[in-house]
Amino acid sequence: MGIEYRGVTKRYPGGITAVDELSLTVEDGTITVLVGPSGCGKTTSLRMINRMVEPTDGTILLDGKDIRDADPALLRRGIGYVIQHAGLFPHRTVLNNVATVPLLAGWDRGRARKRAAELLETVGLPAELAKRYPAQLSGGQQQRVGVARALAADSPVLLMDEPFSAVDPVVREGLQDELLRLQSQLGKTIVFVTHDIDEAIRLGDNVAVLRVGGKLAQYGTPSQLLRHPVDDFVASFVGKDRGYRGLSFLPGSAVPVAEVATVTLGSTPPAGRSRWLLAVNEAGEPRGWLPPDSTVGGPLAEPDLVAGGSLYQRGAPVRGALDAALSSPASLGVVVDEAGRAIGAVTARQVLDVIENHPEGVGSDG
Image (cartoon, rainbow, N blue to C red; front, top):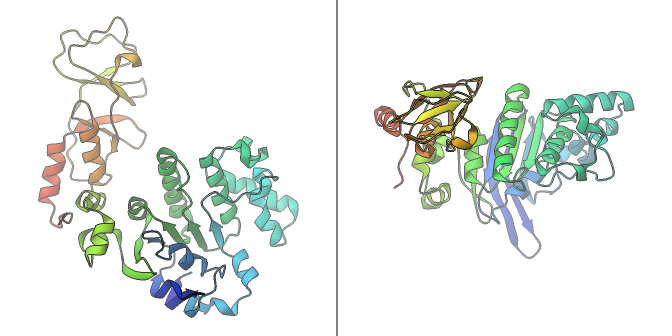
């Protein structure tokens, strides 16, 4: 179900223009991210889709139909909506929070609760959390409940207003991964608001960069924004390191994976070592690095190791390979398979060779 803005403007009393003649098309089954500095009209643009804010001028079409022809309450009930702090009902259990939307749609209680339990599993929450209250959950868990509740409408459209900005970076990355996983399964039409260009580039099939005053500066794929910003404002907002960000769009299939010397936890490392050894557990998963000539008094244990930097899954974009190599104390980026088992290593020089030989390049920092 696509969404189309046609010359949409929102002016408030006093002459303040929040959105100024916005025209763009959100394609069916894609994630479109609205990004820009504070005061650029991101949230206003989002909230006009479900008529929580009414446009002053212009038209918004949902599946080809003018949203002004729909009853606002029915319109909102049929669109999933996720906000920054989840917006959960504190006096209702997790299960009942998610079941709220199906109950409003007229489902009987048993069916609604069954659907809620299915959705909690879908967003990766264990069943034992269903009986808890929101205050008993972490911030990341609350956001997952918020996503589950939005999905309960079973609408093809999902609006997300800075849903992950209130959690720490590690949890945020996990929630982003979860959203991408869900999207690969469900194929919703998602409009996502953020102020974080990295989040926009990671999640968006298309990204709309808005200026202060609600003017659309550029709309395109993340790769297009990074490689061909239309003006200084977009170039500045995307960042001076956009060339590095562009590595996210170069495939890593050409990155060579070399063998790496390993040692298993619990074994006795060889004496007189002149190189770093990658320590793995019995499943072959990397646990850290053993420095050259370090003394180990007995079987190798995790306290003997140096933390290992990021991991690179074979075939993922080149940016991850370069980050793994640069963050490794051994200057060897650990390459893992889909199961997380170490299968080799890559150096920064090998990654740079791939970048230099790629026909499209990655843009510039100019």
